[in-house]
Length: 109
Length: 103
Image 1 (cartoon, one colour):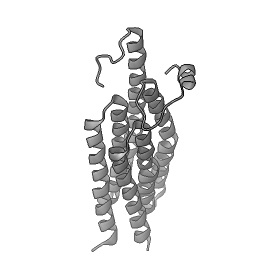
Image 2 (cartoon, each protein chain N blue to C red; image 1 turned 90 degrees about the vertical axis):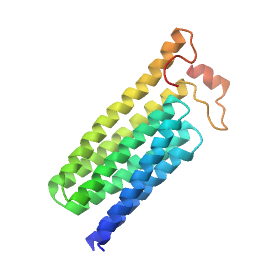
Image 3 (cartoon, each protein chain N blue to C red; image 1 turned 30 degrees about the vertical axis):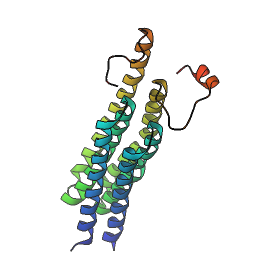
């Protein structure tokens, strides 16, 4: 019974990792690619590490797996914010979108 | 056939295909921020690879590898993002739009 739970967690995590890779390869501009790559960090790694915690089931491993999940959840927004700001300031061309001139002037890239 | 072993093997295949797609984006990526996004995602995918390998090997020590990889990968991503920003300000100061660095 518990094997089925672990198998479902691991398969869902692997599926989200695959979807994230597909999105990073196929989507049209850098911000939309970041939207896809977030799925690998939160859902993919989170579900697989939850599967690891269920599989081993002792306190030390559960603590380490939960610590890794929490660390990924905390650092992913910070890293995404920094990459997004850097790509905006380096004048990355966007897909079918134009930033208003006023916004461009006030933000000064 | 063991259901858990099969699930772990299928998940291994999907994670590695994700890493391969990200690597194609790393090579193709038309600009530096695209490459940073691809590298960041490859790092996170290898964290989940370590989790899968911990289940497969039956050894909880690989969870430690995952923790360390997540820590170091966050620092690498922040450093690369700072590098992209610094390159922009440096090129603006020297009046060069494109710069000589990798595009």
